[in-house]
Image 1: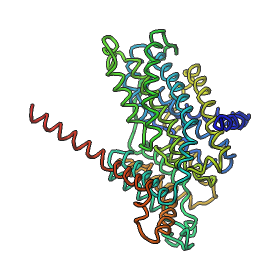
Image 2: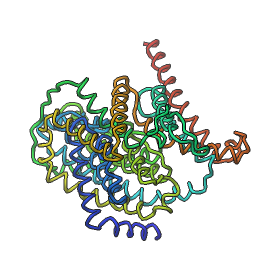
Image 3: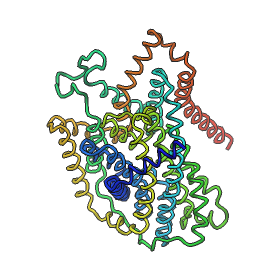
Image 4: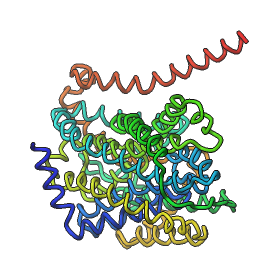
Length: 505
């Protein structure tokens, strides 16, 4: 009953005219961002991050969460009509959705994607409502050794899972950890790694890093390497589904939600695994004429399942973010930065210290899901018109917005130089396939991990055995080792099996 009362108070805060307006603007902007190919939610949130200092925190978080899940709704439009996924999460949708569009069923594909997103998002929001407080209550009982190891787990999962190479992920993490050390030492008050530059005594602003790595780097990379891409758009039919489409879509939505939600709840990173898993499941379960549609005319299950899995994962990812302070994607890493910009650290204490904010945010998820369904189904024609914006003007607008926003924080020319240096670093990282999320995570969680390590060593009187003596910290050590070792063992076994099969053949 306490959860229900807290949620009702959250709705009371979320349905104020100002917060409803921010939620609507966030959802509309997120959908627009999702529709525009190549511009994901991470870029949008990073670009708008500088405004967080000027807006009420509840309204700001509702706005950013609107962009966050709105972009996931909008991402299916370009995938289906243009075969151009704006996010990796939409790659699977493009496989069957674009084939449906080419066979004249673009409307049905867009409808099942929008309704599936609503169903999965709503179910996952109920799970966030019911389980997040219990995770937070459990986490409150943890001490400095457990907190430090939780952050090591965050470093490990984000670095090892995001990106194709663990070594590159770890390198990106250490860049972030090094940047987080710049500034005044938390205990001695001495300047560290500032190079005699007084502007660095306060450390590097996380907002600058997020805007530079995601927005500025995205634009520079597109200008330098992507060149002119000719995009062919499929004709948009009326957005509706037949009775047979509904009958085929409903089980796929539910299966996709069941696959995606657990992946969001665990800090394992990304929507790629659950969406591919959902697609594989739908293809496996298909029979006769439905199976023949996969890869040819386009099967509606191949759109419904992965879209549901994607949105369930994205919504459920708020559980580790809010309760443990662990981001599992680029966008949640930047949302973590938005919280920190207000001096709030997501984690076990958040449900007690900022309960009103958390419950208003959760209530806004319910409202946002309804808003997004209304925005997506009748207005899909309007979103498609966004695809006609020329790329040069679009990227120039992003660059101007990012520059003005970064300068507006402290009116510092040094910040602008730093912004573009970080942007160039982002281009280099992207060019050589280094993931950028670990940099942000390392910068945000690095100083906190350092403080918890010092506290833990004080408890253990200088001995590292304190991490093995406490049951929960020992379990976390085992989990960290499992994250690092098990995927490599599984890959090695699969390769050995392939070699044996090759030799036998």
